Length: 248
Length: 276
Picture 1 (cartoon, one colour):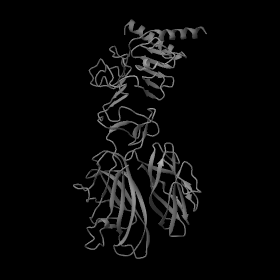
Picture 2: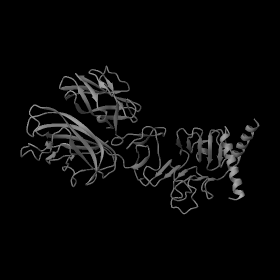
Picture 3: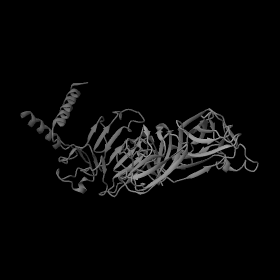
Picture 4: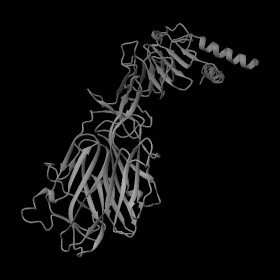
C-alpha cells in the first residue's frame, strides 16, 4: 500500500511539472515535442532529419522532413522520399487502385471509383463435384463467400471458369446468379444467365460471362451462385476460375 | 560516461518505471493539467485550463494519444486511429508530400493500404485489331499481333496508370481436325508485360477449353471470348497476349480466307483493353 501511494505520488508529480519542451534523442529540439528517431541530428548525414517527429506550437504533427522542421504546413504534415511512403491505412478496403474517400463526418476509407480499384478474385470453393440441379455459392480468396460493397454504385462481375464435365450428354448447361445480401435460390437473384457449353465427359470445358449488379449500397454483399443444370456434374478447376469485379 | 551521465540515466529509468506502473498516469508536455482521458498530452500553446473537459478552442493546438492508442491532432478525444480536427484553425488537416503530389491528384492505395498521389481515374478503352495471318504452333507460345489501332507499336501501350482488363476475342481455326471429330480444344493464354526482346513478365494467365468439331482442312473455325487482368500498371507499360495450343493441334489465324477477307479485321482475333 505504501509502495503504491509512493509511486502514484511520483507519477502525479511527474505530470504536474510543466515541461515546456521535451526532446528524445536530441539536445537541439524544435517545437514543443521532438523525437530524433535515428539519434543522428548531430551528424552530417543528409537524411538526418527524415527520421524526426515533431509537434510544433500550433499542435501540428510533423514527420519526415528533409530539413529540420520548425513549423508544420498542415495539422499532420508527412514527407517521404518515395511514393507510398507517407501514409498507410488498413481498413479492409485497401487494394491496388482504391481511392481515399470520405463520409459526412470526415471518416476516410479506401473505396472504388469508376475506372479505378477493380480487382480480381480467385476461388477456394466449391472443391468437389457440383451435382445437377444443386446450387453452389462460390467462396473467394478474400475468405468470404461474397463480395463486400464499400461504395455506392453499380458493378460488373465477370466470370472466367473452367470445370471438368462428367455426364452422358455432349453438352452441358448451367445457371450463374448474382444474389444481393442473402442467397434466395427460389429467385433468379439480381442478375442471372444460363450458359450452354459443348463438352466431352471427363474433359474440361471453359466459359466466360458477365453479370451486373445495379445501384448497390455500402455494406451490401454480392453472392455468386452456380447451378449445373443440363445433366452432368461439374468439378471446378479453381486455378482456372476467376472473378473480376469492378464499378461501372 | 561520467558520473553525471550515469546518474541522469538512472533517474530517467526511474521515471519510465513510475509511468508504466501507474494506473492513471498521464504525461503532459507544456501543460500542468493533461487531459484525463489521455496517456500523452502535448499542449502546443500551453493554454489548456482543465484536465476534465475539452474546450474546443483550447484543444485546437493539442496532440494526444489516448488509452486505445488513438492519436488526436487538434482534438482531445480521437474517434479514429488518427483523428485530425482543424475546425478551429486555419491550417489544413493533412499534407502528404512524397514527390507525387500535384494539383487535382487523388490518393490511391496499393495492396498494403499505403497511398500515393495519382491523376484522377478516367475510364479509357480501346480495341486492338489485327489482320496478320499467323500460325500458333502447338506447345509453343506465339504472340497475338495487334498492329491495328496501336500506331507505331506492335504491342499494347498502357495510356494511364491503373488496373486493366484485357479481353481476347479469339477468331481462328484449328488445323487438320478430321471431319466430324469433336475435340475439347485447349490453349494457355498469358497476359505479359514486354520488358525487352528476350524478357516478358506474365501478369495473368488461364487455360481455356472450347469444343471444336472438325470440318477437315484448315478451316475448322471456332471462337471464344476471355479476359485477363493486371493491377497497378504504370502509364507506358507495354503489354501483349500470347497463346500456346495445348490440344496437340496447330492453331491459325487468317487461314482459308478469300482474297477479299484477308484484310478484314473481323476474321482475326482482337483485344479490348480498358481500365477498371
